[in-house]
Amino acid sequence: MAMSKTGKIFLILGGLLVVVLVVAVAGLLYVSRSMGRPSVKDNSVLVLNVSGNLPDYVAEEPLAKAFGIRQTQSFTSLLTQLRKAKVDNRIGAVLLDIDFPGIGWGKADEFRDAVKDFKASGKPVYAYMEIGTNREYYLATAADRVFLPPSGDIYINGFAAEAMFYKGSLDKLGIEAEVIQIGPKYKNAPDQYTKKAMGEGQREVLNAVLDEYFSRFTTAISESRKKSVDDVKALIDGAPYNAVKAKSLGLIDDAFYRDQVDDALRAALGYKEGDKLRTISGGEYRDIPSDSLGLNTGEKVAVIYASGAINIGHSSNGPLNGEMVGSDTVVDAVNDAAADTSIKAIVLRVDSPGGSALASDIMWHAIENAKAKKPVVVSMSDVAASGGYYIACNANKIVAEPATITGSIGMFLGKPVMKGLYDWLGVSNEYVMRGKNAGIFRETEKWTPDERAKMEDMAHSVYYDNFVPKVAAGRKKTPEEVNTLGQGRVWTGTQAKANGLIDEFGGLEKAISIAKDLANLPADKEVKRVVFPEPRPFFETLFGNDSAAATKQQQAQAAILESMPANIRRAFRYTAMLDQMQRGQAMLMMPYELEIK
Image (cartoon, rainbow, N blue to C red; front, side, top):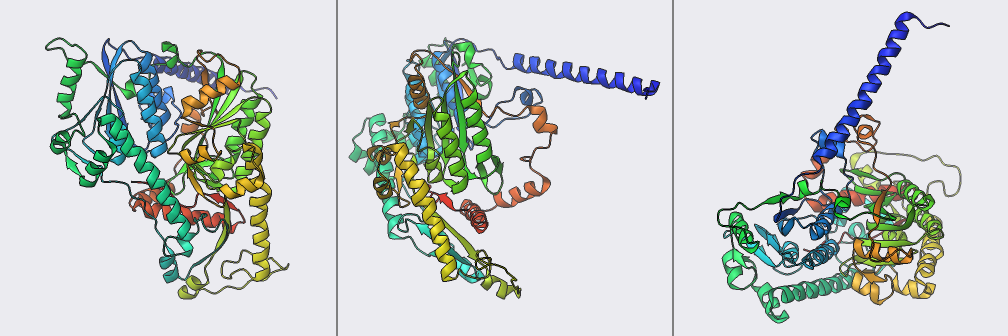
C-alpha cells in the first residue's frame, strides 16, 4: 500500500530528528572530551581527597560529566591518579586530604604501596587530616609529612573487632535458624543467629588477625616516625591525642591549618614570595587521559572486577544487599575477554566475602576455560574469602596484600523456622504435599531426621566433591591438605602466603605485572587495561530499562536503611542470605563481616 503524503512527511521529519540527535550526541562527546583535558600548570600540587566509600571500580562516563552528573570516585581511580602524577612533569607534589575513607586494611596496604611508588619519583607527599582513627593515620604515615589542624585529634587507641549476635532477638520473635555447616569450629556465619556469644574458633581467628594487624600497624608507624616499636605501643596505650600533643610526641610534623600546609608546600616547591600555590584537584586531574602521559598503551590486558557478595544472575548495587557479584555478568565478561584475540591476559580483581556456591562454581568454570586460552591472574582486594576464594583458586597466580582476608574454605546451608513467630502473630498454616521430602523447605517446621540427612549429603557434596578438590587442583595440593586449611578458617594474606593459598604480595599493579610476564609481554612496556564488561552507554542507563536503577520504593528502602546503625544494616543483609538458602542455595560465605577498627 502506498504511503500517504502525511506519512512521508512524518518519516522525513523523524529521520531528520534522528540525524540531529546523533549530531548532538557526537557534539556532546566532543565537548566532554575537550572539557576532559584541564590545564595543568607547572609545579602544581595534586590534591587527592581520600574519602568516601571508594568502591573498587566505577566506570567513568564522559557524557555524564557533560550533563553535570557527579560520578563516584573509585579506589582504582585514586591509584590511577598517583600513577599519572608520578610521570607527569607538571606535578611537583601530592597532598593527601584524608577524611574517613571507606576502605579495609587490604586496600590501605595497597594505597600505601602506591604512595611509596609515587615517592620514588622524588616528589614530596604531604598528608592532612582534621581527625583520624587508626586507618586514617596508617594511610597518612605513608607520606613524607603529616599535618593536623591545631584543633584536630588522632585516635590511634589500638585495634578492636566486634561480633554481634541476634539469637536473643530471634528467640523473642519466635524464629529459629536451622543450619548445617562444614567447619563448625570456624565457619561461624550462622553463629549470629544460632548463638549468643563468640565460639572458640571465632575468638581464635579474631585474635590471630588482630595480632597481625597490630604488628603491621606499629611497625609501619615505627618506620615512618623513626621510633622503636615499643615506643609506638606505649604511645598507642596513651592515645587519643590532640594535635598539639601529637606534635610534641612526634606523631605528626606540625599542627597546621590547611592554608599553612599550602604555605609549607609553596616553600618546599621553591615558589617565589607572594606566588599562589598552583593546585589541581583529583576530580579535575582524573580527566587527564592516562595515554597522554604514556600510560595505559600497548598490548591489552583485561581487568574484570568482582566486588560484593556472590549471587546468581547479573551484578547489581542496591540499598539492602550493597554490591553484588552476579555470575552471569562475570561469566560473560570472562568469556568475552577469553575470546578476544587482542587481549593477552586476564586479571580478575576480587573483593568479595563469598555467597552462592552455585554462582561461585559457574564462575570457576568460566575461569578454567579462559585459562586454557590465556593467563589468568587474581588480584585480591580487602577480602576474597569462601566463594570469593573459590572463584580465585584456579588462577595461574594469586596476588593479595598482607592484610587481605582470604581462605574461609567451608560452607553452610539452612533455613529460618518461623513457627514461633506465626504462633505469636496468630497465623496458622497447613501443607498439602506429594513426595517424601516435599516439605523440606517448610517455614514452620524443622527438618525431620531424614530431611536433615538429605541436606547434610548436599552440604558434603558441595564441600568435599567440589570446593576442596578444585582448590587442591588449583593450588597443587592434596584434598587432605586443603581440608586441613579449610573448615571455614579465615586467613590473612600473610598467613595465606605461608600456607600456599596465595602466591605473591601486592595489589592490582603487581597482578598486572605478573600477567604481563605470563603473557610474555616486555616488563618495561606499558599495557592497555581494558575493563570487562564494557560499561553501558550513558543514554542506555539514563533512558533504558535499567534493572539496577533505583525505583521510588528502593529509594525509600535505602533511606530507611541508611538511618539505621551499620551493624543493623549488616544483619538485614545476612537475613536476605537466609532467604536465599530457603530456596535451596548452599552458601560459601565468610563466617562474619570482619571489621577491625
